[in-house]
Image (tube, rainbow, N blue to C red):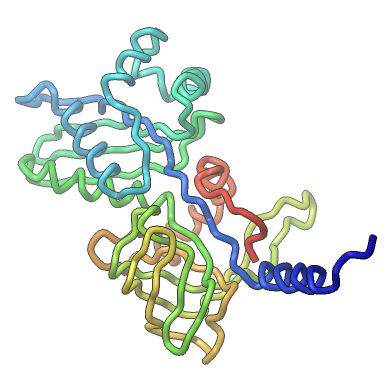
Length: 294
């Protein structure tokens, strides 16, 4: 039986069109558990550690990119598993908590009352390895500024999970990226457009030490939809270098509600490069792509 020629032609056309369509990313929120912060020093309110954890939980939820374990459920699991919060920094306890809750990242920390200041320390723990992904510290001379301090800590935690995606289309001075409101981004959010360069390996061990990134420019989101956003090109290193297939990462210079990321200079850049694979593994599965990414 001969296959009709028009059906064969139609099949080829559909196949060719499919190849030209950009891969769509299904956003999946990062599941995080926020523990009560331990307190040190003489606080008038003995529940200050719980208050800090509550505010931090609210801030992460409002970011739109995190699925936070409900705090009552978290306390119940900790009690049932007989895990003391002070023991959650060790490998066995964090691994056990992660398996029970189905999370890969736990946020814990301390609130310290000093003579003339208050300090908040927060740590992001990888429950699979027990390693600390990031540690942040905020100090204020005003104890009444606790809410503002928690907001700063929240922003810094979000920095450990930068948004990344692709330019899927360009028309003139505007582009469409595969990041939308599902990922918790907003109008005014800014992204660095870049491409990957050389892979830098250790000459003896072959370990990947770094991957060169070449910045191509910067864009600002103007129209955010559920899964895609239209952005205007703010700057471009070389005319035409921002094109379909180039990558984007959230910039620290965004508008209100924009996702931030660590600075690409100085000490933070070094931390980010050294710990990139650990952070990547910690949030593995947060983005699952259908088809190829490039």
